[in-house]
Length: 276
Image (cartoon, rainbow, N blue to C red; front, side):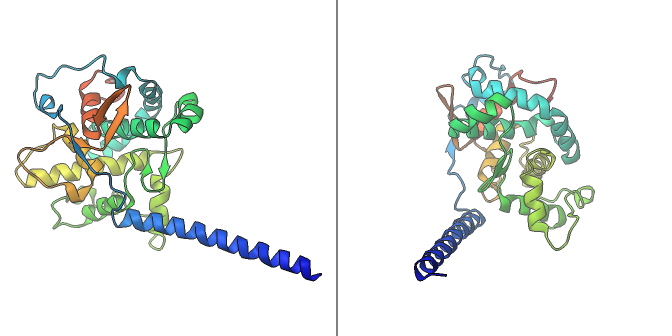
């Protein structure tokens, strides 16, 4: 082989090594950022939360999100996945609609932040967006949150403990590669069961924690969705919980994660498929 060709080949392989090293660095940095909570979204308090504390709140029929193209797409996708959501809800011991509140807020957030992908893929196919990087699955659950959901099922001393009937609900088939199995569960493009199950269990665990502290939030889906958005660390029982979370703009109006979740829950949208 001639010297010029040898130099070119050597330079090519060096460049290839540098590229792969950079990709590895980015992936590792992303994982560490998620692991140490650097990707958690700062929350906002929803000024509309007061209206949600009233039992006389009437379902909205003309909210901005209901008139949006994002909701039109999401509605079709939710109808397709309704049987899976119902199954996960039964297994987690929560209502299908409660799980759906987190899906609605997270998917509309995703649709509005990834406009090109929404227009080219999600809208034409009427499908849910599955995340696989900083947030996972169709509800955007964090990797460390999923790990804690699993741990809470096993720890009898945890305020999030749900009892012996739930201990083996998330058992892994493998004892050596649980990390990969967890990612496969949550980022499955075709079967969203585990994404819904982890979400339902999170919501039930947080409810149990607050009940042990003497505060019942089981009938406050906006608060529960807010706590899902903010994570376990922000779940600190108090007598006056507020609705808030990440801000989402859809249909020209700004909502918080929990506020949008509450509006969906109170609406008449998909009541047959996703009952309260």
